[in-house]
Length: 416
Image 1 (cartoon, rainbow, N blue to C red):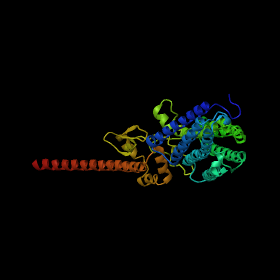
Image 2: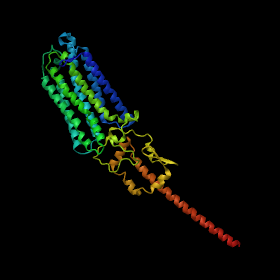
Image 3: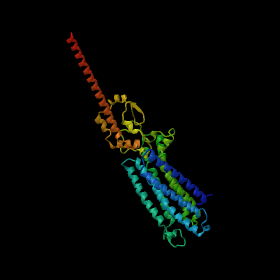
């Protein structure tokens, strides 16, 4: 039974190990998707790996606390267990703050993939990053130098002075909750402006709003945090605070990884995968519309689109067919007939000029393919050249036949 901040040490170990394993598995799946499937890894993936490392360290420090008596009364521990339990508790507070910082930075860098390249929301994201880093620096140093001398935190035989735990921990918790709320709310106004069906819009809001779970956990953690800050029996009252702290870091990791796994789910469960319209992707041969704007939200930068290994064949004509960007084929003869319907070469070449179009194509197919459209234009020009050459050859053949006919007629007249 849970009473105040107490539960058994076995319950602490079971919960924190379970959530840590889930976080690690999803992070591995995320890295596999980003690095091998969509080939679209970024700095947000680096931060999530750092966050997982700190999460594992949090789990290790808390399991060590269990081994040294967490869940039992402090008075029942021997002198060595008392010192080691508090020493690992001290270490867990430090790595907890660093883990939260890495996970939130990963989420914010993930937002920068899809936020407009200029504007209020991008500036707000950078501002939140700066505030988060400054707060983490304060939380880190307030944890390291919680007592003077430092070892008086875990060794009661050393006399020293310590910061007021209630004030420091609750001020840190307040800043943590504020950053959680800001991180969760930041992308929602942009999602609300998307011109997609309401069901898809609401689904996107749910996916990106999962970060709100960490905010809920941070609030639920306050009660156990108050208990441990006022406690004189730390090993007995610490278990629930340990559980909520570990869950907060790992749930943040889980929520950060979920939006990145669509490419993997599409590969593993094609029949259950959400349609391409879910993230506004397109499958047209010419790629995204030339109306793409640098201020538009691009969810493909999250790495949802799995690139086709044969996509570079899209602009290469063969004797019979050429391949389209969406994997289908079209008769070359049909392409020749339709080439006359394309804009003039100068106009077609200008379609590849805007940098946002090339960037959108690269994000759309998940790799560097900026040359495809240019090659396509060149292919169309080549087709027109072939047609022109063919027409000239036909005219030359016709002239030759006429000349031969006249020669034969004159020969007959000479004979007669």
